[in-house]
Length: 459
Image (cartoon, rainbow, N blue to C red):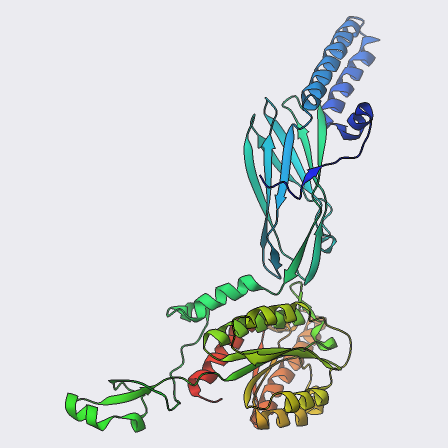
């Protein structure tokens, strides 16, 4: 058992004082005492019950004393330790393991209380478990962090009872540990797998037929309906007496930047996660897929100024650089400066690149204020503006209205939803591609758009 970070509470107290600190009486003890007290009261009415009550009291106290002796005769009757992963994945269930060992010669029952980080705000977390004599057992539970940062675990408490169940002994283990919560690397592994799986249609990733190509020849293959007739190889066709076409490799080493707006528009929470964290998780996944597709991945964040800049490269350490930069992205309440964003992109990104801009627009006026900058970015690069549907309003819009107030609410929700669709149309009018998505579908929709752009050879 790993015990290097776990130890017993070592505060020096006299044995009797320590016993008082660690001894607790269960409900069973109070129920027994209450029943005997009732017998004593009845003994004043029925004298024969008085002697029975005294005998029961004497026997009951002996059993309680025996229970206490059984619990406290072994100094290390229970040994427990906590096993934590090296880091947690934000927005995903993360396993925490607790290893238990029973050194008592009897079976015991445990109530385990783990001091969870304050971010979870759990006040009644406990695990019940039974252990046979000299048994070793591992129990586990999952926790789902909803924000990045450092999470501090406290002590581990095991409240132990025997089958008698009158008393309880507390074992406290010093188990102070810190775990960092990073962007969702568990989601990263899942989408890496399905994006390269031939059967990934069921996950929502589109298979898009390639209509553009590079000039790097790969092979000659049989013609199928939909192939570009300009690629027909007439010499091979004459030899095989059937249509043959040249197949070309995809263009590689193209630059893809994830640009994350960390202004106040990204503070809005959905299902516990802020829009910023959804964007960060999606950026991590798309960066990994970009690198595996032999392109170059980079990222940065912006609001009043640009921060966390990672140049688009394709190297072994690139994902670690992106992961650490995404971990350090923090939102603020500033109004995002798209003018500064344009100047930074023009100065630092000199080659035509795919820019995946994660932001949020709630109205057409908000888009018009930034439209000149978006058009300028799209002129030198391929810009994809990614913004979000409001889940609550979308659900409200689909509900049936029965009262006047519900009709008004639904009309307002329809108006906001219509504005979002107008934003998509407005961007499309100026040749700017966009993704309007629910937060929970952000990652999969971003992957689809990237694969579509690659397949069509738009970059």
